[in-house]
Image (cartoon, rainbow, N blue to C red; front, side, top):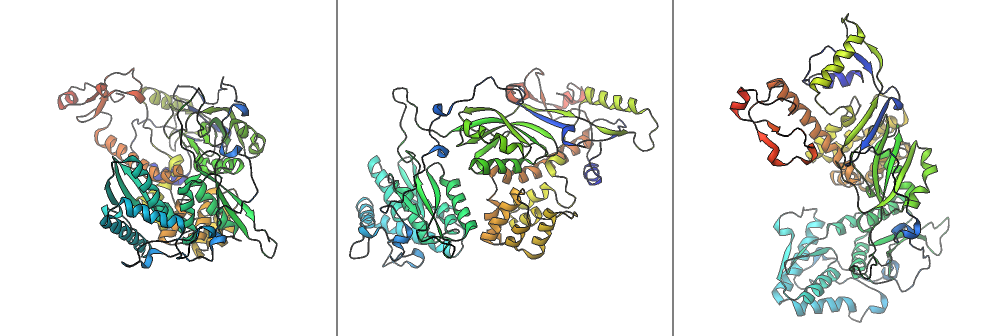
Length: 594
């Protein structure tokens, strides 16, 4: 069946299990010619209406999108502006004489010698619970972490952590965890069987790419203190794209704990368009988790399941659009597998932090994007890749004709091919859905670059244009010629969600190896691993083809066969899997379908 010449060339080297002549035809002439319906783990088609009723709002526990919006600014809350005139030392140049990091804090907490009360208490705690040598080694470890960061040295291996040893008293461990994180917000502490291990806080380093180190230092102190009803405010900022990146980072990393809002400065005007990002703890999210009491359920993350129908729409574009409309990020969505673009597809999805009623409210808006959602209901957890039984396909093949120089009756050729597939089966090779239909770049090439840690090459491949004169390819061509991410962003159409997310990050971090790493992390996890899976799929195709070319459809020594044909492949016990012996190969004991 025809897709295009490039596709036929790319897959012509693969070995197949049948040798019938076959015929020509065209699939996907229109999206309605290719209908894909996911089959869930219970064997049900997901496009069938669910019997479970939609939950009412008053039965849903409070979630991030339903919290009351408090806009009054509390002058007692943390604000970076209030502390901007206070000296904040860095550990980049610390010496043996001065190893204590002493950040500023609220003005009312400052004492005469320049060290805050909270900081002095942390020093006293560490001094009283740790012996002099351990305290000194801890300070030296903190200095080393900052020095390596400032010199762009990678923190890997055993030297990237420091053990305080075993602390048997549980209360002392709790005090030490807090004291270390407050004194050194760029470090984290981990408990291992009464042992406290100190490690670099990589999220701190990541935030330093977006804001000043002083702001990052104070933000992580605020985050660790978990002070009820408190807020933290970053420096005023006129750059909307930069504010967006800060919002995205905080919500992605700490969205279950805090929420962010943007507020204009009190003297906001067209001449002074500065906006401040304020962070506050989500309602009750900072309080310790409690066990079930008197039948009252603890507050938990909301998960809403639904069936998504999309038409002629790429999966990641659909998720990106839904995320914007619901006020969440793409990684809040989970699904069992990717579906074709040029098709009508039905699949199960779960979104975090969104109530069923909130999802219902956007039904009309998303119809304009050729999407529908139904079977909306509350569930207890997200989906994972592979959590499905399979897919049901309805495929229309058009423009049927014989192979070149084949004079046989076309109808007979079609029936012959159908019978061969029914009786002998077929090799389920990965096709253009996995590798893309591009002529210049395929997804497996990007995956290989990622596996080789060639991040700049991966980004360049991702933004390589095809030989088409349309806005998307003109924008990609401009980027490869200029590496001007900002200019490319202005040319890239709004609907290209992935490309725009990448370009926004490249504009922020630069087209360097480190910048391309940061940019790649602007994609949701499922998309980042998609390209690596594509390369794995290419290797699978080649391995299966080699096996068929070498042994044909014979079952040979070393093959694995299933001894019970009635068992579901998904739940096959190891006792039913058999390793074929040389004697069994000679006797043709097993068939290829096993």
